[in-house]
Length: 91
Length: 145
Image (cartoon, rainbow over all chains, first blue to last red; front, side):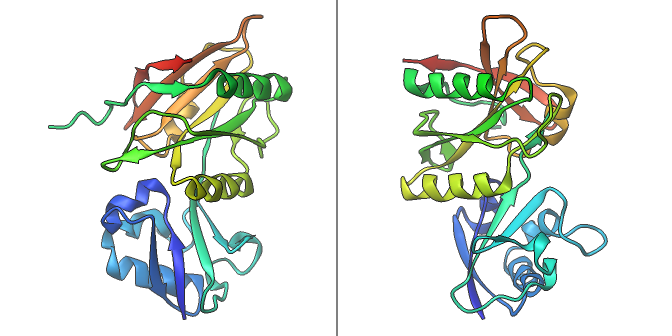
């Protein structure tokens, strides 16, 4: 499956400044693995030390937050759009 | 060596400024938050604010805020439709000064963003902007007009 991945500004430096990139995979986790293979600088920003989704990142498959789907096992189809969003918070 | 904290003057219209303040008052006594979008040049924000997006505070708290991720997604898409990107975030401090808290510094995600804080500590709102990078805070100028 080929999906379009929209990147937050912070990650674009790792992708030659691109705001979105194409990546392959049948699940979000596989797409992320493909992304990291292409753009190694993203590694620490997407996945935590335990192999889960980094807590400072939200990921949407089209309009759905993958935390409420199957997290990194969420399936993707050709033409889906994944959006990587920073967790914007403070006090 | 480039200065990581060098940020352009944030330039807002009066209408945008009023939208930000109104959202802060509407959210009181909880903290209110929202996003700023604008054009980039050479990979960095120019400082011009093209759009302001009032967002929900997912924390619904007087002490912390988290921009609702669905609102963030909608803002990113709308900004993209305008050829813009997110360039900053604003939030209110209901009982403290318009200066980044330790939590703000710890959770700052993007050194290129302007972090706008609106203090409602006194009757008169005070709005200031900052860049935050690796724990260092520097005020960035905000121009309204």
